[in-house]
Amino acid sequence: MSKAPKRSKKIAGLLSQSQALQRKMKTVVRTELAAKKKTALRKAATGTSLVVGAYDVKRAISIMKNPSASEEDIRSLPSRYIVQHPNCPPHLWWMIADKDSATAKSSPAWSRYAQEDPERWSKAERLTEDFGTELGARKARLFAADCAMHVLHIFEKYYPADDGPRRAIDAARKFADDRISASELDAAYNVASTSEYKLSHDKFYKSVRYAAGAASSACLRNASQAYHWASLQASNATDNSNDELQWQRMRKKEYAQGAPMYSRIGRKASTKSKK
Image (tube, rainbow, N blue to C red; front, side, top):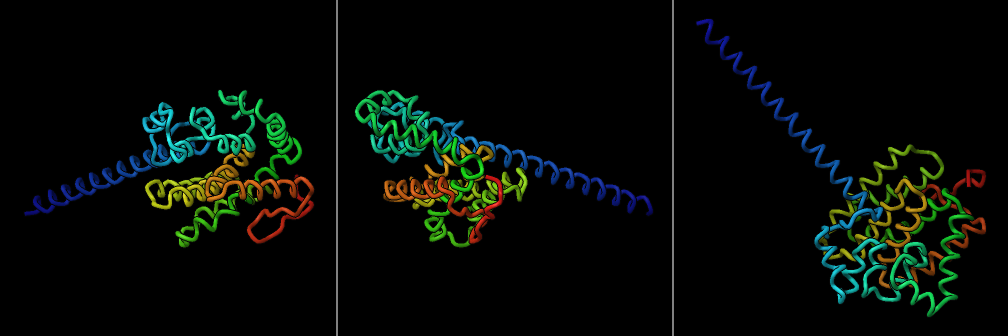
């Protein structure tokens, strides 16, 4: 009679160990999938991959091969592919040129647009160069956060309970003043990117997702990339990108002239902090 209970206990112990192992394996699989997802999101945000939101590589390639693709489809691509598209509208090309003249210069349309309006092209080159040389990494980061903050209301109007993008902007400002670590900045980026990723099939995709993307872009490790991508996505988030670009130029000029900067939402940064 004593052997039966012992066998039952042994079987129960083996079963418990098996269940624990299965749980552990599931955790490992989930962790690996989450890591792959984060890597894909980061590549999409930094323009190193053709994967953008709901679009996979095949979708993006089909857009690039379609000479009559719509502006909405073209806008869904990273900027370095947007300017390469044969049907890229002039106003969209110039919008990117104002943010990143080097990317625009690499496109086939550069020689034509630059010859048609050499003064405007010279200004686009000067804007890009001046920002990098005069403002520096800290101001570039804070400017990126400002661009994202300026369109954050578009996202929060529809998703007031999701504070991921707002926390990302706050993290970008804190990182600019060395008040959080790089790993904390990455964590904020991942949270905001998740909010952006969830909107891939949302009916408010065009504006709301770009607003979330601007927030996550402000958390990119490279300050120059943060500036370019946050400002570009903020422009895409609004119905009138020209008005948004005008606001950005005005804010950038204020930074260059030494206007107070906001390292934290609602609080001015110290004038003694690093430039």
